[in-house]
Image 1 (cartoon, rainbow, N blue to C red):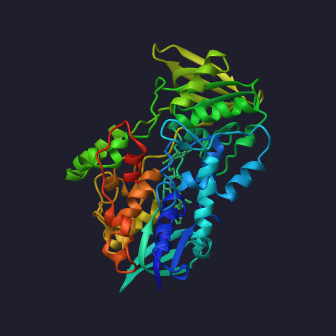
Image 2 (image 1 turned 180 degrees about the horizontal axis):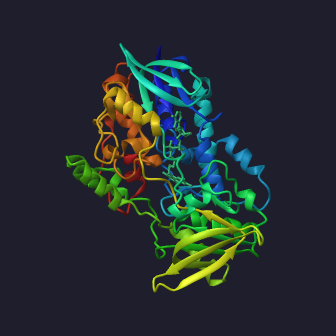
Image 3 (image 1 turned 90 degrees about the horizontal axis):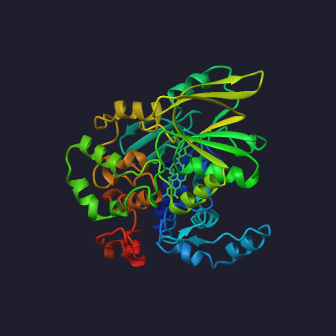
Length: 441
Ligand SMILES: Cc1cc2nc3c(=O)[nH]c(=O)nc-3n(C[C@H](O)[C@H](O)[C@H](O)COP(=O)(O)OP(=O)(O)OC[C@H]3O[C@@H](n4cnc5c(N)ncnc54)[C@H](O)[C@@H]3O)c2cc1C
């Protein structure tokens, strides 16, 4: 029997597995179950498609145990040597302001170091969890291939990365045979190089991924014409949500709220959906000024593929109801992820079989250790009614791991390092200093 089974090997699952190994759980008593052959595959796919060069989150939000691991990691020979071997002209900064946000390259290099150091590949099992049932002393989880794992504790770290959001008009097109030329940036089958030769690209979505993709496509071929379609005006914010959500400033009120519908409203209001980090906004404005990117404030009515011209024909209307029609070689949706609870029928059946409590929005009601019931933990989006708006992010993974490691189940396995006991959270203000960020991580 395993001590721990972590279902999902994205940033959330990997960070928790790192904590488990750090605290003495043997590789042979831990399994990380994920459909991909390597850790962080989904995250890698999505971030590569956007072409983003830097994280939106600050340097203290890494997958390491200690907050400033990334800062010291830049001096590690393995990172320095790999940087030296990069093609000439690739002189990206390891950190950019504000709040020393790390490059994606640095974040990923360090993440791989974490995986290697903790020996997580020894615990890796490629497969998809389909059924979970309780046993006398834990849980039994069956994969799509009928492989069965028995574990005292199970962590559901599923993520929303597998559920790209296709708007209604696009769903119709996707199901028809005429979906050529229309892609979703987060579709598992989409690779950015598939559209390498498209001169004329329309990107749908007004958030950071849409703009990062547009800027990347222009960098590869500056002669392209790019249209970004958004139903809202440009929004700027350096954070997905106010950093006050990482500490007591907002979380005290959030956790005191007993009505989960109210908590959901607080989460929705706190998220800076469809916003751009300042440096992305700056680059976009230059590209718009140079007439390389056209920002259309319209709502799409319908899209069809014209097999004769091999173009996508887009019909949309603007605020004044004027109709517009234009053609593109390719359309890419950057419309984020479906808001629904992740896990599909696996989680639907778990709720039924194990009689698990959910709020009206279908999301888990868990305790302060993120236990859905004894020995069954959640992280990421599944934990957001307890962790708040940052739950899906790397900061949310760090908050979740800390809570899970303080649970009675975790404590009975291993000693909790002193820095957890000594940890105290300070009042957070938007003008964070390094030491503030440190104490929240
Ligand atoms: C382009 C992009 C940029 C982002 N940038 C940042 C950033 O800078 N900072 C930040 O803090 N956050 C960022 N985020 C948000 C967040 O950190 C990522 O979405 C991150 O991938 C979430 O991690 P996760 O482990 O929850 O999900 P995922 O990366 O989706 O991993 C979940 C894994 O679970 C697997 N899984 C699902 N169901 C099952 C099952 N039944 N059995 C087994 N395995 C299963 C999935 O296949 C997947 O491999 C970004 C997100 C995106 C999309």
